[in-house]
Length: 80
Image 1 (tube, rainbow, N blue to C red):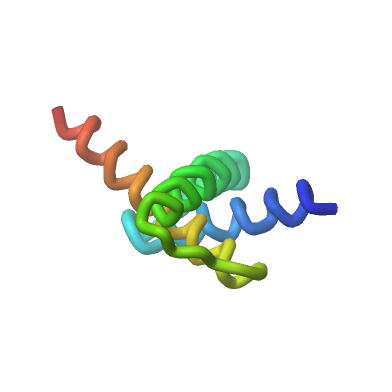
Image 2: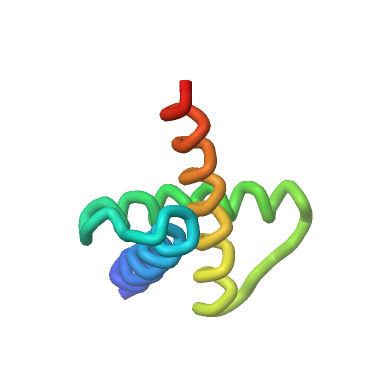
């Protein structure tokens, strides 16, 4: 059940990050990948900062921030 919840949070976070950064999503699979990788990045960043989020909303916030960071890095790479 936790894995399914992780995928759902990743999908929502990837979709939201796509809307915020570019104004469009990347499709179901793209959003899922961006959101899941973003969840790991967000957890790592907030862990370094000593900030802990709990619950579904907290996980979504961390995944969203991580997905935004990931999309920002991708946009920097694409510009070169």
